[in-house]
Amino acid sequence: MFFKDIELNIKKLNTPYCMGDSSSSDELKDIEKKLSVNFPGQVYDFYQHVNGLSVSMPMLKIYCLSELNIENDKITFALLDNKHKLAFAVNQPNFKLEVQHLLIDFIKSLRCNIAVSFSRPCV
Image 1: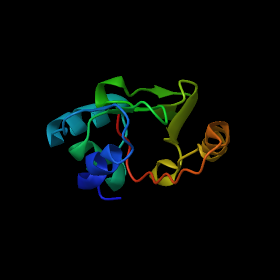
Image 2 (image 1 turned 120 degrees about the vertical axis):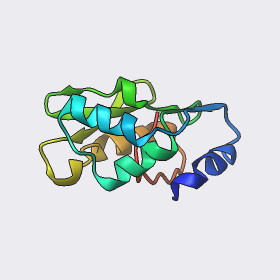
Image 3 (image 1 turned 90 degrees about the vertical axis):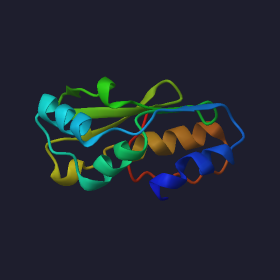
Image 4 (image 1 turned 45 degrees about the horizontal axis):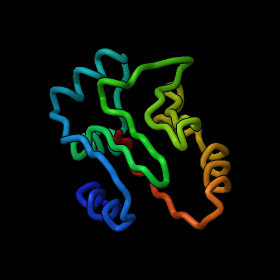
C-alpha cells in the first residue's frame, strides 16, 4: 500500500475514521531525538503522510508522533481492538515488528477474512 492511498483504502471500509495530518521532517527529527532512535525509512515515510489514524471497524488506532514512547525497549505505535498493542523492538535491526501473534489473535477474534498490510505506523 502506498501511503498516499491510505485514506482511499480506508474509505472503502465504509466505517468511521479519523486521520491526522502529515508530519514535517522537523517533527520527525524531534521525536527521534526525544526517543534516541533513528526510524527506519518506512516508518519515517508513513508519518510524513499520516500522523495518527483511528478506524472504528476493525478497531485500530495508530498513535501520532506525540504519543510515542519507549517502554521495555519497544515503541508501541498502535492498538488493535482496544487491547492488542503493536510495537517496534528498538534493539532489533530495522525495528523488527514484534506483533505477529497479536495480529493472528485479533484476526481470529473478528471471525472474518481481513488482509492487513503494514508498511508504516500511523495513529
